[in-house]
Length: 465
Image (cartoon, rainbow, N blue to C red; front, side):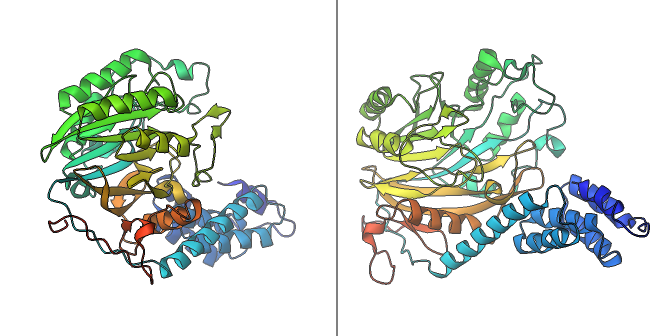
């Protein structure tokens, strides 16, 4: 983050004054991901030396860390004015302006939010909560485990996770205590290979948070080979957490007198395969024959801040086929799935109602500690609540907004950023079938919308939750 410091010292004219101590203190706070302290120190740096390029550059990074895009643009525009030849400012300023434009677009969408009247909950139903990617820290490489060995990592969001008939998460990496190196990372420079491995003792944190069932079908489940895949499955079994992921696996639970089957998919033949729709359809039909309700999860789609939209046709990511997700989700619903939950892009995506069933195309990052880029859209997540009737049809839903702070600590987001993201993306990607999302995060099907944006539903006989 300090190339501008050298530039500033090399400017023509009289020898510049030594940088104020707040510059070094601010950079140290940035490295510790303490955005508030960094902003305080670097603002003092700017006040003492208004023409110091490095002070403005690093202050921009402090605001970047806190997501204050308007001030990021202001500081980096000043860098551009003071040093037009700055090596990185053009690229970073373009990114910040894009994020600022997105934030303004989200704010505009919030002003036009519809009103969603929660549906009446049927007498026989289940209330499920689901989150996207969870990786609570990794022993590879060293130094990426959270403070207190993760004991407090989920404290702010535990009550949201536990308050449901059942709760789902994607386990983004194995639970394994091996010291063996990752074949995936052989020959890679230290820190350049993204392989994850959490201690098996971390399974207790999933249990304490109320997670009942999870997906092991993702691009990190094999980071440390077959032994760690088996370790993950054995560890989850011992913890009482149901799972699906390996080819042919179906997790079974019972809630409120309903038998519920979970089937997890990824774009790999080492798991239930998103890209093999014929086999996926057969597996869902088998699950439906054995259960009252079937819930499908999938790990697919491109990744990163630019992957928020769901394209038509297959998605490619660095040459890898990450699935034709519209075709897959509709296909498994036609085969009997009652709810489809997506994860993998590390950002939120839109949601739609297909033939009375909800498809959430990506729930984003929820708790991804240590090695994830968490800024802008990648820092935003949610807890998705869905009520399904005994017939499997969507009754009601709600987005409970979260974000990650610091190195990847999930907290509730009072600004409701996730609500605005999902509303905007659902409208843009699914103009006819996308869900409507009100200011409180309640979601409902577009076809039930009445004049003025109010969703009127009157299904079932029991009062809603």
